[in-house]
Structures are given as structure tokens and as C-alpha cells.
Length: 324
Image 1 (tube, helix red, strand yellow):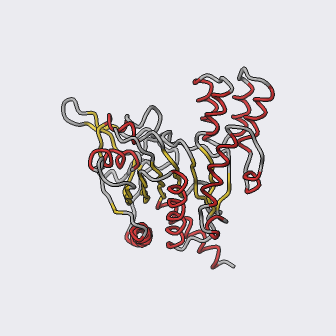
Image 2: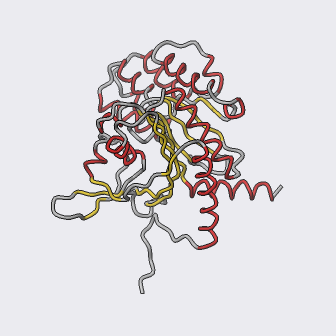
Image 3: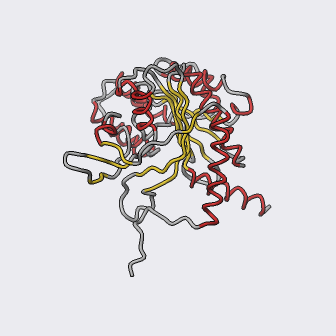
């Protein structure tokens, strides 16, 4: 009897499932208490719907065999499906719109890569609010939700998805070369960034700026006097941090090298880290053009928490406390 399951998937047994369910309830309680209504969408979407997000905007998911002429795929996140719902069912509704969810998502990975093909996400989408205020609200909900699960030691890296592409464009770097640099930036590979920069036909001063920006990190960054487009990015980040309650603002770490893998983000972006893990528990940010591709020309802010990684971080913090 073949009892194997595909790499990147796993069985969740009753004890762990009960722990995950408690986490889900804690998150949803905060979401609902903040005015967000829970939404569900189909696991399978038309490929053309996912393609509207733009080339390379979302990670590759799995194609599904449908009927004649049907190109289907498993969703790779909930932001694009919710953009579809908002534009088709709430086009004339009063803004802003607030949605929340707990749902599985799927992404294609290489076999035996150690990366999950299927994972559980919990998050929100805030649509049609003023960008800085919306980012501050989303970050507040995110932090309060994580605190409600018992997570204590997390911090939030906050940057601007539009900054580095703007710099590359202003220096006349072509699209292919820009994408090569941005791939290294998304991987946080500073050696790779420096290698790609060395191949560009730009001045030494421009290369120095492009090499320095990804390394600009920490509260002191917000106090620096810089030229455009750096100044606009710092002003945007500063406006969001200043709008947060002081206890939450202390968790924010400005990081100009933060560049999201989700290509639809265009403004302030953020990632949640915990000392127990080497990868982000949650990611999110502002998207200015995604909804417009569905005929609803407004911006939105959202985040997604990886519930399994959150569970692992909670377990790690608990082990650390009991081991003291």
C-alpha cells in the first residue's frame, strides 16, 4: 500500500489541529472586533482572473484540469480573489471595505525543496481607505492579532516596495537588468545585488546609492536627510509609524532593503519576524493598481499570516520561557 503524500504537504493530527484552531479563533476574534467581515472564496479560480494581477505579481500555483476551454488554477493567496469579489460585488458600496479570512493557499515548489505547497493563511484586506491611515490600521490589527495568540517577541520590518524600482528607473536601468537586481533584493542576497550592480552601465555614484539603500535599516533611517525618491519613501514610512500607538510603533524597524515577492505591492510593505524563526510569519502592504485591473480604481492594504509558522513561533517562545 502506498502511504506517501507529496513533498511540501503534511497531515495534521488532532492535537496540533486543536492548537491551530485556537490560533485561528484568536486571530478571527481580533479581526471581527476591528470591523472586518469574514469572507470565503473558491479554492479554484479561472487562470485569467489570477493573470489580471499582472505578470509575476503572484507566485506560480497549480493548474487544474477543467472542462473544455476552462483554464483553472488553485489560488496562491487571497488578495487577488478578494479583489475580484470587491470589484464585482461591492463596486458601488460605500468605502472603505473590510474583509478577513482564514483559508488555505497553494504554490508550486520544486519537489523536496522543503517549501510548503499548501499552507494556511489568516489575514485582512482594507480597500479604499487613505494609504497611510490604512497601513497604520492594518499594522495595528496585525500586531493586536498576534498578541492575542500569545506571541510576544515579534518585530515588524517596514519598507517601501516602490523605492528601489524608482531608483533603477531614474538611473536609466532597463527592465531586464532591473528585474535581475530586484530578484536578488527579494532574496535579501546582498552579494547577488552587488554582482548585478557591477554589471550595470551606471555611474559610480549611482551604483553606490543602489548598494547603500538595501542596507539602510533601523530607526535612525527615518531621521536622515536624503534626496528624492528616498525622501518620499521615508516620509511615507514615517507617516505610517507616527500614526501607530507608541507601544506598536516600538515594534517597527524601518528597512529600505525590504522588497516583497508579491508583485502587486507598490507602496509601504511590512514583514513580521520572531527570533524563533528565520522567515517571516506575516507579510503585507499597500497595493495601488491591483483593484484597478478589475475595474475598481482604488487602493488597498492587506496582510497574510502564515498560521503554521505562527504556531511554530509560539511553540519556540514557550520552550524558551520554560527552559529559563
